[in-house]
Length: 67
View 1 (cartoon, rainbow, N blue to C red):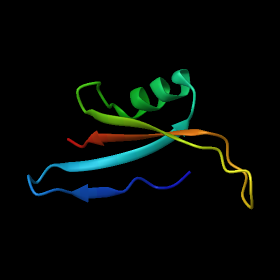
View 2: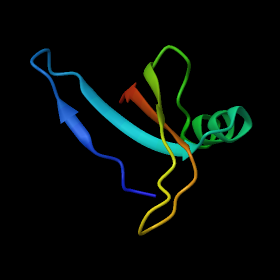
View 3: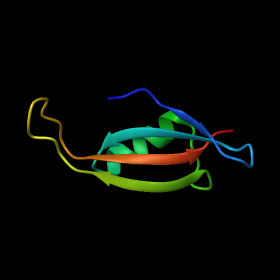
């Protein structure tokens, strides 16, 4: 798993990202663990599995507004 990254946009809002396993229960657990509410979530993007070199299962990439 990669470390969260912060991106600053022109409106000074900070956007963070997290990666979770591509399962709804894992996604919900990670959001609760980090205290991220549904209002903060901007997008949930599927990330395909990687089968070559370093195999990784499918993941969700979650973009959310940091508080």
